[in-house]
Amino acid sequence: MSKEGKKFRSALYDVDPQKGVARLKNRLCPKCGRAMALHRHPVPRWHCGYCSYVEIVRS
Image (cartoon, rainbow, N blue to C red; front, side, top):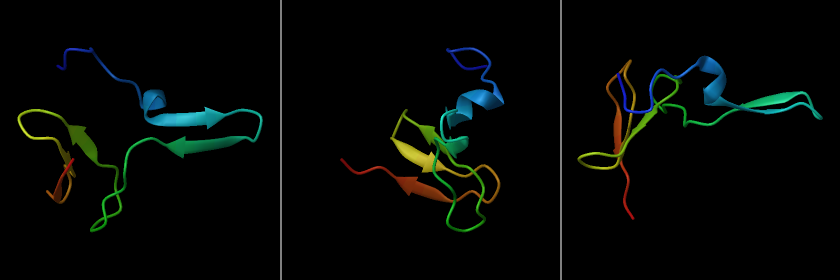
């Protein structure tokens, strides 16, 4: 389990109740279209757990 503890599905979205819109915080995978995870250690990167697509973050 991560240091922050268990994450809930609601933590993955920004919700605007005024407009009635929910927006995903994470990126979507260009290969399969699922949500990607941001890993910061040892190298900052976006990773798709479904198809194993990886994008290295360049600063």
